[in-house]
Image 1 (cartoon, rainbow, N blue to C red):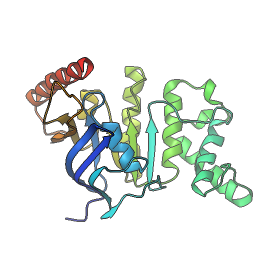
Image 2 (cartoon, rainbow, N blue to C red; image 1 turned 90 degrees about the vertical axis):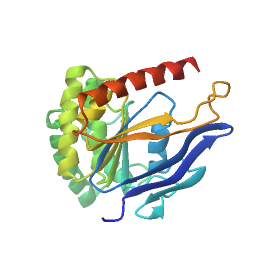
Image 3 (cartoon, rainbow, N blue to C red; image 1 turned 30 degrees about the horizontal axis):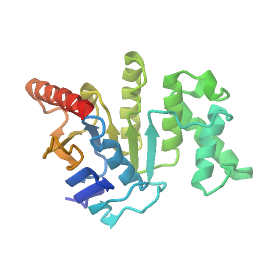
Image 4 (cartoon, rainbow, N blue to C red; image 1 turned 90 degrees about the horizontal axis):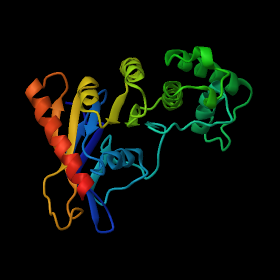
Length: 264
């Protein structure tokens, strides 16, 4: 098999005395779509930030194409958060053009001349793909939550990342809009040959999207010192091949895990 795009080897992360992740071992190949579930604070978002390059390993290794991930974000890794990362003073079209400008190391995000015309054409095409062709001249305050998230996704994908990181991107959206966003992200995943990691608290969403589902949990527990041990990947399931009983068992486990986390 080809070299994995992302590989974790005994990966660990801690802040001071608090251990967040420990002993994470996994491989992900190009084109996979991995959803991450688990209780709040179990290290899912931390793992995404380590792939992005804004958090570094405390122990073990996290590799990109066989090399240690750089200690800073790069154009090969894009991220979309639950909170919309858009510029309020720019129109929808200007927001996406600016994302292209920042990729070219422009401090302001502004492009000029031929570069700007090409970027405008590319941005318009991208916004059409995400269903915002009718809103090019609107400002973010004129958009619904679903439209803002489509804009954030367009900003990330126009930079042509190999890896797209989604940190609960649909958590604040209504169920009907979330369904539309699921269809959109699956279409973009296939159209742009992306490798996707998506954090979600919705187990059904995790089983519906992508190719693999990871459950993050602590293998070791100390009631007297809840942060003495970190989480690891306790389940790595192929999406679409798990039966109803597996879903029910995981749902019960995650509910208990969340309740325990809230009491700690």
